[in-house]
Image (cartoon, rainbow, N blue to C red):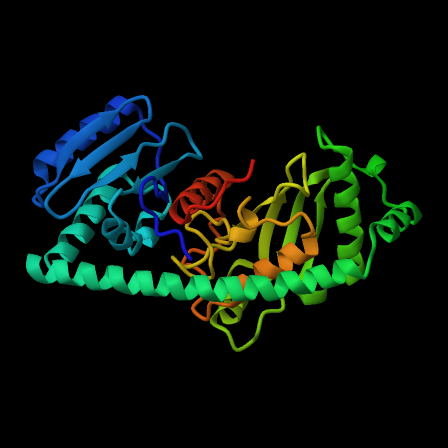
Length: 353
């Protein structure tokens, strides 16, 4: 199950901010001079979005307004998104100009559409769609089987520890709600998060999982996943990533808990490193593609360690899981939430609050 980036499916590219008027002028000049048949389809000034169309495909560009903002390139056509994603490394290079991004997008779309006659292309798309549907059904069966096995393990563990014993451990530990800023969270949420924290601390890195609250905020956690199988592509990529960027060979995650946790699931996303497109059950924005993390698949008996065990297992279940060519370009929360919403809509799952 993957986010295939249809609809609002952004490919983020670092770029130079420019005024909206300047962007329109540059676009108009580019449209006049390009030989690929691309035309200016629409302008959305408030959203700073420019729409392009051609016989080869359509795409949209959102213009950065201030330093630190990004060019956003995406399409409502899944086949166009797949083709554009191949050039993401080029478009992600620092200080890329608008005309350079447009030239590359036009070149990619034009080249791909010209590769086959229209009739052959139609058959190719049908075959590809059929392949994706078969793969989706296969992955869903694997996901349901794995989720059931892991959830049964968690439930068995929870049965060994009654609510009474959890309260006793909470009272005996030096950790308390006074140690954290708890915001508007309910007393139940605070109690449960502290209990989950103690359980995770007692595991001492078991399952390759470490983490805890960010500073004094009990409702935001930073987590690291490590100790992946040395025979996997992901392990090798993490070692290369650590050597190149002087970072630890781990996956850095962020967990944000709702005020009514554990009745509702947390929002879980990868911060860095970036994953290769459509691998590891990681969406294009860095959120995790699991029904468990939606209201549809959530169980209030899931604790934090159990959630992370399942997330780690889900990532490892894909033998193709790899890091992107620009792995140190961290995901933003906006990217992750947008991709999560698209995933929920695609599979008909219920959203978190």
